[in-house]
Length: 451
Ligand code: PMP
Image (cartoon, rainbow, N blue to C red; front, side, top):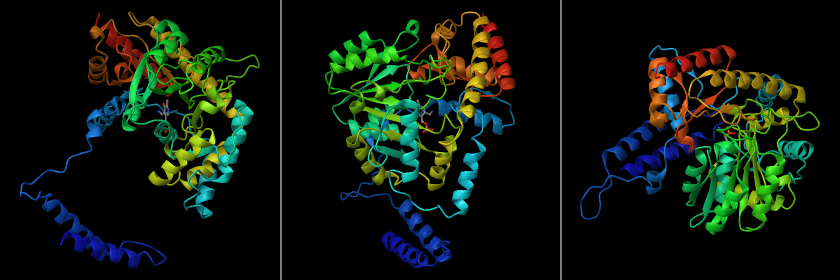
């Protein structure tokens, strides 16, 4: 009976979809409702007559929900109740995408660029990405075989991991880490191995510790390298990256997933006066073993466009495109057209954002330095996060601290323990100066009240 209702719905749908302007006919909706209702009314019965609840994928029992999302949901709930909350918990820029990007998206829609594109992205966008990487990063990728555009960098990280490793493999994740890395490693069936970094090292990878870790983990297949880092804002210098590359030469089975999504937001300058991050793939002998991740969310404030990419030797790019072909087909055609325009934005626009972000960073660091028992040992040099140590409070229970801070002062920060950095809190300073001033006052008052 259920089956026949579904079949009836499908038949109606297939007839209706032949007409030019499609809207589901009411008969179809009715059949679908009947089918869905009957499916819910009859749980699966085993042959012995005992009824079983369908179970979820056992993999889910290992996956933690994101604390950022949890805090964010609480904030939304409080706002819905009419409360005003100061939120420094989301990781997205507060500036708007360039006008030319919005115009390109609108033009693309009106010109009918509303259909699927090639799985790996439009040739125009891939060419633009390859040119951009060559010009700014010195890496040369074949746009047709070595670049895969996806629905955000997040999807590209996942596909990169899925392409490179699986059951029985280990993924080395330096802590503090972006919380999705360990969960994604578990999702692909691999085992995350946390490599601790030291606050005195600015939370950057220590080459000796990396060597020791790889020597004791022969199953390691991937090293996650987030540079600049979310959540610490740490930037690995060229020299440090070279030392990491040297260590990796001893371990030919290990590849690097270099997540460089924040590479446009760096506050130190090189000899030419520009703020740049060295791309790991540009180091000698590292191209063949690096999957580079980048995108448009942080650099161009295009988080909602869901546009990112993976650049890698064809073996990995091909694997990622096969996976993407079965999972999401392609990134939005409209977002891709916007991406082409984004790659033509003048450098001045980025320089201006960096300048504004740097002022906010300096302000937050200055205010934190005035707070008792709060320390930022090494100032962050990139991205838009600070991870101050607040372990003197709440006996180091950062989650309770954040929950009480939210309840009492209506200030939302994310507990550092969700990034593998217990006793810290993550502050995202990508918000207006006015909001930052309110936030710093609230945090100072809250901590003073605990003394
Ligand atoms: N990598 C890191 C380190 C991030 O912080 C984020 C976003 N928070 C992403 C990847 C994903 O970015 P996107 O919006 O392009 O999916």
